[in-house]
Image 1 (tube, rainbow, N blue to C red):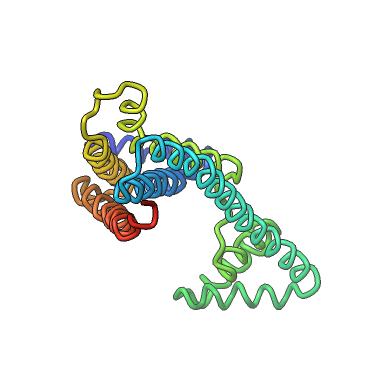
Image 2: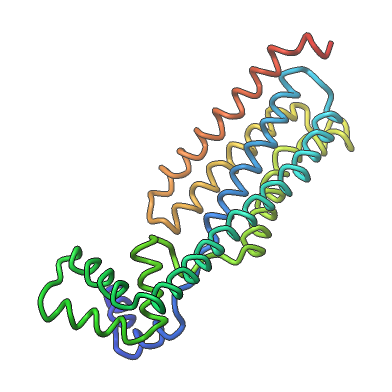
Length: 248
């Protein structure tokens, strides 16, 4: 492992990595869609099962949830991600105007930003001179340091697509036992129990996969996601039981 780490820190390897630049991870978008897809679909399943309604109702409501809520989440993620990019564009326009109109004031902002980071004297002045000698670098620095915005972010359409795909693919899992029972009666004798087991496994696996990317213990992340999803499903089931008389 140390040999591999050393290879990635040779001058040539570092140069190649920096030339490519940073890449945005869409893990958040996948987890966001996957967890919500499983939670909301199984919440529908739990509520309908708690109310004692037939499998056909579970399938109809579950499919409606996959299409409607999945699309809604994808659109929301698209608009939110696009808004993040628009904030960066707005900040860039503002800083372009400020650098043009008040260059000395903007240099002083750079100076104070890096003074707050512990630089002083000639080191500080060299940093100020180096950053403000390139207009794009100057403005990029102001966007990051003054506004606290990231220069690079997700592509809105890709983030939305990943969220929707994760929502539908993972969210369909709780419905599979009911679909099997509907088309082949008797093949699944206890569809809600099987759905619960499939859903619990899905919760755990989503958390475990997330842990692979965030350096968290896989079993701890799996249990965490399992508990969160289980609470949502339990609440939905209890509501279904409480309102059972309404549909009878």
